[in-house]
Amino acid sequence: MNSLNWQNKGEIISVNNRNIFVIDTININLNTIENQKKTLVILHGYPTSSFDYYKVLPELSKHYRVVIHDHLGFGFSDKPLKYSYSLIEQADIALQLWKQLSLTNVTLLAHDYGTSIATEILARQNKKQINLQIDELILCNGSMHIELSKLRTIQKLLKNKITGKWVAKLTNYTIFKKNMRNVYFDKTKATEAELKEMWLQLEQNNGRKIIHFLSNYINERYYFWHRWIGALKETNIKTKIIWAKNDPVAVAAIADLLATEIANNNLYWIKNCGHFPMLEKPEEWIEKILSD
Image (cartoon, rainbow, N blue to C red; front, side, top):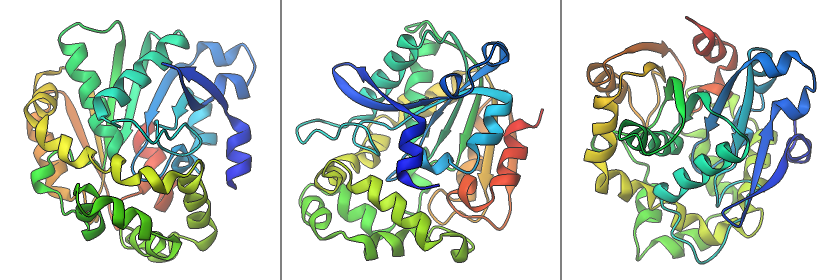
């Protein structure tokens, strides 16, 4: 799978006057059975894109209508230079997109950066501010408990208002490749070809110029800690916590703590696996996603 092939699977949809890249498998698998499937919406992580799911989309789409988009500032979506890139606004975009697609009942799957968008959506649902039924929540390797996260040096530099823009300018493929490989357990699974496609999508639409803006999500996890962790403590939605146990950033202690805070949850471990389980151990990750 390369970036062009991935791009050809999706389409651009205007959401709040921004161009958002979306893959909706109902458009790929045009048949009546597709209309009878439950819908899985996916919120991807940082600093990558929906492309993280290229290995698992074929199997997921056998069981769900899958809707996955590139957040604003990521992948093939718009990357405006003058924008806040707040997780609050990313939640606005996701909810508006799903509304435009007439989605009313979904399973919500989120990884990394996407988990905080998911908790913002959850906070609104708990307060009955949105008309969306979330049948199941699936959380994967996200540093929602930011106080437990082991941030990489480059993340710390990018989120800083002073150093961020300079680090973004100096970031190149070699630095990106090194940092991505460092969050895998088995470094050989992060292939050169795959990493080049990720980098190509990061650079798309002058993406390097805004990567330090995107990194502010780390600060927001502190600002909105009580709102977002509070939303997880309040919800009764059936939740799966699917965690790669050897993630050096979103460490196992985060999953353990979430399992004590979310009322209706099951915790599943993927051993000998790093931050991107859907890429490093796709078969085992799929098995956990589809388990009862």
